[in-house]
Image (cartoon, rainbow, N blue to C red; front, side, top):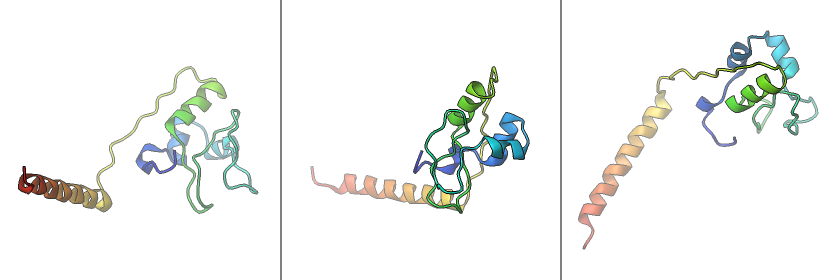
Length: 114
């Protein structure tokens, strides 16, 4: 999911908690290659989201984690829970910008000729 906010994606620690496996075993499951930045989809591996550089952390879509747990690890049920993340400075700034733009739009709509 390129371009999606990271809040919807899971980091390695979250995946480790969901799958209840050691960090080392999670790394063994991940579809990575030292020669490729982004490997083609492998149904037998845990496929991370597309990265633009090796410096970006590995992130996983919840559906991919659930697919891997059911299809490969043969888990009967998989629960992926999201905890509410408190807004950070960026989120607060974006909310303020949105409110300002909405106020400007409302003002322009009331001043436009009929």
